Amino acid sequence: MKPSSIAIVGAAETTELGRIPGMSQIQLHADAAINTMHDAGLKPSDIDGIATAGESPVAIAHYLGITPKWTDGTQVGGCSFMLHVRHAAAAINEGLCDTVLITHGESGRSGIGRGPWNTASASLQGQFESPYCSMGPPTTFTIPVLRYLKDTDTTLEQLASVAVVQREWAGLNPRASQRDPITVDDVLGDRMIAYPFTKTMCCLVTDGGGALILTNAQRAENFPNKPVYIVGTGESSETPMISQMQDMTTSKAFRVSGQQAFTEAGITHNEVDHVMIYDAFAHLPIYGLEDLGFCGRGEAGAFISERNTAPGGRLPLNTNGGGLSFMHSGMYGMYALQESVRQMRGTAPAQVPEAQISVCHGVGGMFGASGTVIVSNQKAGQRG
Amino acid sequence: MNTILKPLGSMVNEDSTAVRNTGMADKSKIPVPKATPETQHFWDGTKAGVLRLQRCCECSQIYFPPRPFCPACVSRDVEVFDACGRAFLYSYVINQRPHPAFDGPYSIAVVELEEGPRMMTNIVGVEQTPQALKLDMPLVVTFEPLNEDISLPYFQPAEQPVEQSSKQHAGGGR
Image (cartoon, rainbow over all chains, first blue to last red; front, top):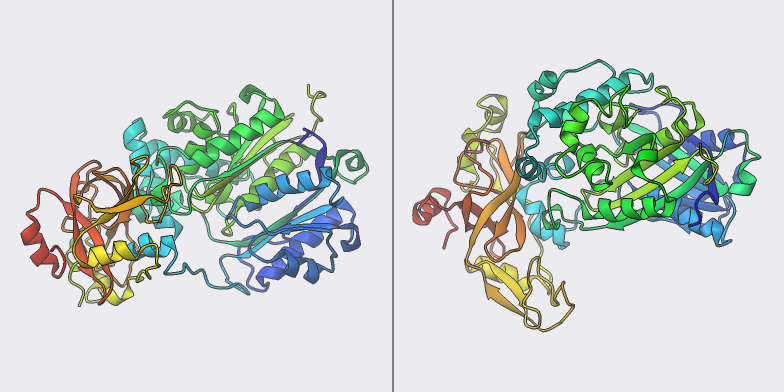
């Protein structure tokens, strides 16, 4: 896509985050969507494109009273919303629709109005992974890390420092679920979930939602809030089976997606002021920093433990507290996008001063898919 | 009564997890794979005590999981062959949360077969501790029937005499 041709003009999360037993999953979508339409000064009849994951876009459009000319139900896990942004930008530029609403809502903790999570026993995962009794992401997404640690001489202490630093950011965010400071010893001494991962190295499980509204950049100037321009996007996928990753120490999907986004944006890593990397588990920011090119191979653990991504550091990362400390409903990508938008609007609780470019990177499944969105509060060519 | 998984009980946490799971180990709680036409040869193999891989007759690529074409060059000219059963430990976690099929913490691992492909498995016949489970340690396949049709491949340390281990863990290891 042409950099800065499309902008985010509406962005909001659900009114509440955390534990929301009084709301079903589809209502979490609606709550976020209504807050977002309010943020943009729009009503359902102004929306002509809809994208969502976790629920059918048909169901969301009908529930909200939207008649779409364009729908996208891309469902590749937690980064689906990064892909929706990319697809919506292309659709608007192609003239398929004008104003796209992207919604996320997930009753991840309370489980209200959501179906069970099942893997078909005849699928390849069902035949060749499920019989080994992996109990979901905490015991599956985590499998690669011992190989990474050994091959790169990264330490468990460095891995634990990811959770420590993100908790510092969460301490600055009133909406974060976990805000009390922690130390590396606290993290390593916490309850073991799946060696080497303790509880604080695993994401939260919460309820919530978020939504975005996108339109073309010309119209974007006329909305109540400052436009956030989309300057680069990327997406890719590797494997639905973590055991079949090409190399467990690096994500091919991350590399492909990230490189597309940087190339499209025409920016260098030095120009980036703020980064969000989907952190379902403590190793994700490490893989992300390396696979996106911010750090060399094996350097990200030290980079984080030496406070480069902490408050006051040179590359603020996961400034909402991340999936580890802010919230994680299951498909966290939407919350990473929300924080990038807040940082570009200058309204984040832990605002990075004068930030102009934010890189927002998501993972889908367990190193299965990836989406990258680079946003800016300045149009390409006008950045200072 | 589950047998292969029972020896895994005495592991990492001597405390609550093991206690909670005492007597609970129940093989019927393992999700049973359902073969498809494309994977039937694999499950026929494990039932007969062999691990079967596929090889492309055009580009020689060896691959897993099964499919009737080569993932490297898309040739349909592929053959099934018996793997040697040797592997090394590529990466793993030790799950500490109780699972009814296990008496205590258990490893969920990815092994790299001598022929190249990797597969998920549980490492059996060894203490489920970081000290005992060393990355790159040599392993050998063993089989455990789940029902009349499906036997699961597991891996155990290669140093351990296969005969003895088969008895310990009952059933498999033909």
